[in-house]
View 1 (cartoon, rainbow, N blue to C red):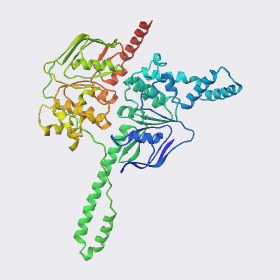
View 2 (view 1 turned 180 degrees about the horizontal axis):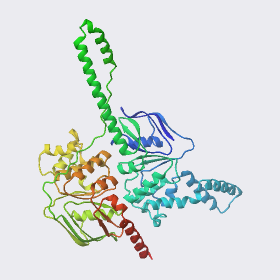
View 3 (view 1 turned 90 degrees about the vertical axis):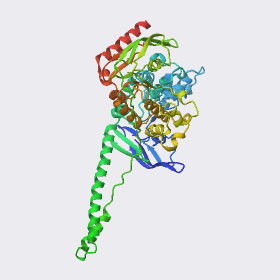
View 4 (view 1 turned 90 degrees about the horizontal axis):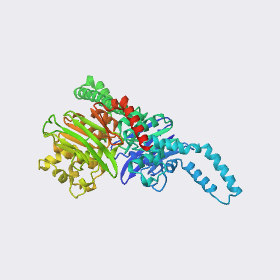
Length: 545
């Protein structure tokens, strides 16, 4: 059990949290939600002891071990991958290192023998003999193959490091598990594995995530941060949304009835207060009026952008033809003879763990990269707008937001441009902020403004939900669902993919393509999905042999 008692955190004059009292108990997975800036990550840091609150305290059941998903991807660069995972149980790792040091001594004394015996006993009690196999199992489940387990962390790419740090947090069955955005940089297979792990996990989990499907799958309760308070709701994210909206609706209806009663009493008092025969009744109604209190309904601190992609022209039947595209990068063939034809109603989700392949294909289709072989052709009625995964170059300048967007606007009118910025929550003086200093989420909203203002009828989006809060993800999801054009996108948000795509393409690790006209859930459940993975694994083993 972990409990916050009267926790307050002040940042200058602003109180981020005020007298928060909440208890997280064993057997539950809590989804910690709230708008950007509400303090979700900050509250996790308070619970973990990484940040001290202004007042109040955090209490953990004595003897329980707390584990945290770390965010520093370079901290363990000089350690082997397997060792990094085992460090998730600090005491076990200390024992292992001390044992190694003792057994490595040339002059092994009696004292060393006694100490080694003590360590061996503690090591056995902590299932130390299973440590490496348990760590390897976690890594394999998250998609880190055995060949990488003895590499140094610095030899891994960013996505692999994230998976290792997640395995480190999960290692050793911690009593309390704090996870801040654990699905970031995970492919959909790894997310599915993590969902199953947390569903079976019997201790306490507190997780921050912008992935609605993930929260619905794993959470038994939702802890909602709004206006410096945290309120618990039983159930998953969808149940929280429905119950919180129902509560607001009930409060509004109750207030409406109270307002009608107040009006009725006021009219009676005004009409009969001077009437001697009715004075007692008027006085009674005055007392009744004084007792009526309207419920305070504070609007949520959550803000939803308005995302609406409106094509300037209707798309024709010929959209995109891709024939035999292949591409090798740094000696690895990431695209191998990729071919497909898009129809005018297609919304295609590119899924699977081969992120470089997806980004490479999008870059080729948008003319930023040349294929080694093959060709592609956009239809004459098409116009494209692109959301790149890496937008660094876009914002490497000293333009204001308004001037930056004006450069892409077909209408050179500041009022017109500010209208698009306003939809994306850039109000008033925000327009004069320099794009160079924007946060990750602000840059994403700028890029979406650029796509909207373009009037394109074909959208290409490479991981657009990265850096977005849940409200913005929901708005983008709804915007793409009602978009009347063609969309090609990659995204790790299961619900986003399932509700938007009518066609699924997966580029396998060997660079080949699987193309199915189906929903994402149907694709995952299909026998073909299982067969192709079996075939690919067999082929890979044959290649290695």
